[in-house]
Amino acid sequence: MTTKGTKEWADWNLNLFKGCSNNCRYCYAKFMAKRFGRIKELYEWSIPVINKKILHQSFRKRKGRGMFPTAHDITPQTYIQYVVVLLRLLRAGNKVLITTKPNYNLIKMLCKQIEFYKDQVQFRFTITSIDDIKLKYWEPNAPNYQSRKASLIYAFHKGFKTSVSIEPYLDFDPIQLINDIALYCTESIWLGIMNPKYSHGYDSRYYNKSIYEKPYVKILVKSIVDIFSVAYPETILKKLRLKDSIRNLGINIKDF
Image 1 (cartoon, rainbow, N blue to C red):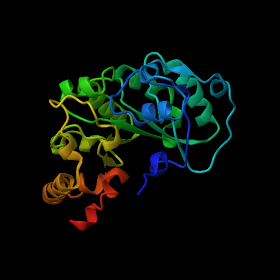
Image 2 (cartoon, rainbow, N blue to C red):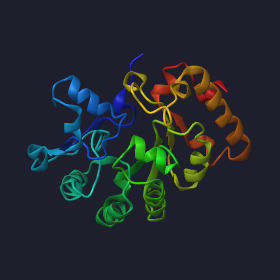
Image 3 (cartoon, helix red, strand yellow):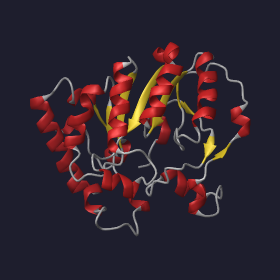
């Protein structure tokens, strides 16, 4: 089965930059860019290149919800241009899913700048581990765990719709992470696995292929359902969603 990509979360998508300074080792967009000739070498992806056409483009109101960005992040280097385009989208009446590995200082500024449009916005913060050592290996230039959790809490208290993506989960057991962030998610918590096509040559201290294979994933999902259906059926379990990377293994929450 094929994955839906961004269509799983949004009706349309937009990117302002080609490339992302986070330089995540597992980045699907990076591998696709090389495969289809948008970059010659993988290292080029770590240097974002702006799309000037998008920067100066006018937007109309589009049907459904858009996801912006999908293949780069909101960083100190991209923030100013990102906000220019985001505000243009929001002023046109668009609903936007903001996806990011959040930088706390940037999220504080962003919440202030788009406060008027909060009903049109949902944040989806990518938080893949509680372990900063793992985060540093897999997502070398992205913010640490405390920055991401603090961003989630801040946006939550400012009245924004909040959600979290744990894809790929980097911990053998992401239950502690789910428990840690669930209170501050007004919407959903998404769990997904790493794409096995791009899992070669990783340091064995940080990578175990078996945790992304069906037998382990099935046991993990069952454990999550068993724990949270008893302890927090309303506040956590109802928010939990499985990404198509897991559902394509034939695993669904309702089966447990």
